[in-house]
Length: 400
Image (cartoon, rainbow, N blue to C red; front, side):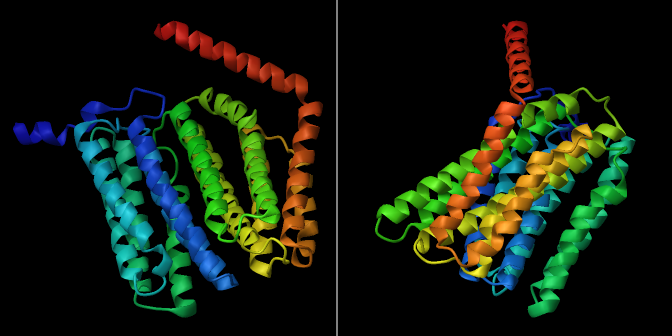
């Protein structure tokens, strides 16, 4: 009887609170180090191979984080067993992050083993949480299969190098990303407001990491050029925050939460949040790489990889937002699409202009986009924010 009670501890504490808990925020802090290490990996090897390595590591760790976002939309993360398991997963996540700089070298096995522990803890908790839910149990079994294959590929990759190693990593990431799609969305469950907030907060963490990269990149004497580049870097990060958090996040969350629970809502969560937010985070990490290199050489032109990262990263962020809006509302943001195209068109200038000028061009494009949207959609923006404030007052009154 006592053993049975222990085995049901997690299922007895299904999640009831829609808001993100302090423990989840604490867990997400480990992801800051992972983002910083991915940037450092690419900065240490600014080649196409280094770029691919950094994005592969980022993708693998993103799917580990996404798994816990889905998990804590089902179970209460503050429950005793879950809390301890999340602490253990944090420790393994930290070890994996520490191994990132040499994940394609001597620390490949350490990374794979630590990553495997993170995923095992995740699957174990999901298995317990699904014991009384046959639909969720079937989905968890399918996820366990794809996750096991992915971890195995990373373990094999740790014993290889070169092109074969990149292929194995790519296959592992593909299995992680395609697994939820192939399994189907019928069996999963989530709390939409919590799920949307969790992904919004991880974007803030990524933007914070881009600011950290600016500070880390400032190794030279703090002169006029460094100061101007740092201000532009902060301005670009602020512009990316504005473009997502001013209105988009609230419109998307309302659309998401008003859907009927079930397959359609789960598919939207998978596509708009798990998939497309990865593209946004990848764009921010690339921006961080470009900002870091800009601070190191403010008066020189950027090399190919830093220029692609700086300009292309912001363009990727905007394109992901275009896809995000289309997936949520089935409408196309032509202004954001046009801004991304403009950035890609001016990318060749980043190879010949001083780094400071390239950063200024990127900011100018974003500033123009924000100014246009502010004027063109002013009434819509005010209405959305007014309704949001009203909803918040209603919620506060209900809980008073």
